[in-house]
Amino acid sequence: MTRTVLESINAANVDIMGVTCPSCFDSFDTGQLKLARKFKLGFSIPPVYYFQLLAVAQGLPAEAVGLDRHKIKPEVLLAGAAG
Image (cartoon, rainbow, N blue to C red; front, side, top):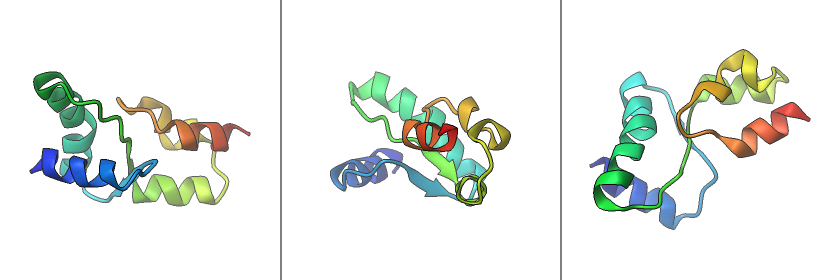
């Protein structure tokens, strides 16, 4: 199921995916890396918690909300939040 969702998201050419549930986050952060190795997939779509997105939108730095600790780094947010 994770692979199917990632294929759909990848086809939509997104920068990040928003999630609210810890299981979903783990499935798309760590699970995405496992799928990439197992099936030779080139996905690199960072999952980000909705509350992290909200915090960055309100001006908090990326490090304060833990964006720098994700396995798949949300570079587009890290760059925007740093400057």
